[in-house]
Length: 300
Image (cartoon, rainbow, N blue to C red; front, side, top):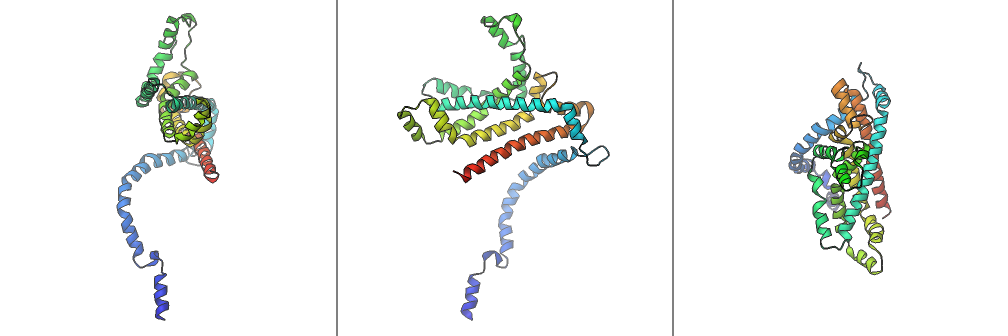
């Protein structure tokens, strides 16, 4: 009888011992107090406005549930939504290509002066705000801007045939110029952490730098590249200053139309409906990345 009782006592789970739950909570209390300010800030500054904007997008003037705001957003700003998607995809493609080229050269390049110079120069736009980048692009890409002036002085372009690039081309170039340092920084760091023995083995067997980059290095840092592109997508869809400065007509980015709808009409419902499309685009990109990550973990 005594042996049975002692065996049962030994088999009692620790979480069922009287008072263990209270001790567990008291042990978690200091950690909860430390993260409470951050959680409160996230809840008040991000989560609450997000939920409110989503709810407002489906609430009519009489307070009832409706899809009229979404229909109005599609009717009035459907071209702007499509324009935003195309400009963002073009910008991401240019960002990915340029970042891969720079990071690949920083990893595989052998020049004693080009690699340090490139490593020193490519980070500069990282510390420039978007509003400064927009103003710089406005003076650089205008018809009489610095770009056309330099081309005309070099004899490459006739000054009378100069065109303004303050359209979707200017947006793509400005977005790429601003985001390439961020993506390159993540990509170059991931490439630098790779085991160089496989790269050296491929080089010894006669593989060129392009083949090493696209067949050995890039497949190993693909998750970091997708993370950087998803973060860049979120950034590009939230920028207001650049499209306002570079494009004066329609179509334009959704952020400019959201600001226009609020400023001139005070229509937060339709503006939030436009914001809903931005949420859907970023959610689709995040879902694609998570699916890819889970597939790679399931089939390493």
